[in-house]
Image 1 (cartoon, helix red, strand yellow):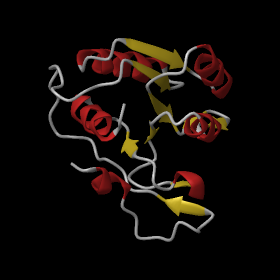
Image 2 (spheres, rainbow, N blue to C red):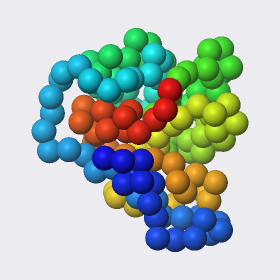
Image 3 (cartoon, rainbow, N blue to C red):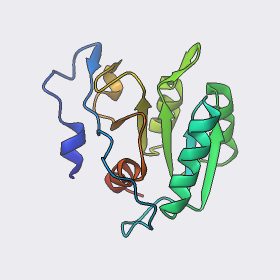
Length: 153
């Protein structure tokens, strides 16, 4: 998979909101170490505790040393200020909030991130994030390995 496979979109980047392509979940689940480089630390922004615990386990199985979990925008922004991560996985829907404010801060710090959504293969995002990688929940080790492989650390 190349960076263009995830980031290509047929719409103009001038649109106020766009429908973004996603990385679809893989069919099989393997819990093995990834041969590709992985970030040393990942900020995982997820408001569902079960999903967060499973995702943390997968990230660690791929070789991530530190997984910082936040369940809200304020927790995530505080974690970024305390110690910026190497990479972030952002849930789009955090109850009454969205992950877009977190994405703005990460983009300002030039920290790579991926959006995660349970809303299907396409969802509207602000134009500023139209080219950001996206994954669909439920995701698994193969999906996370693929998006980690897209990021430059």
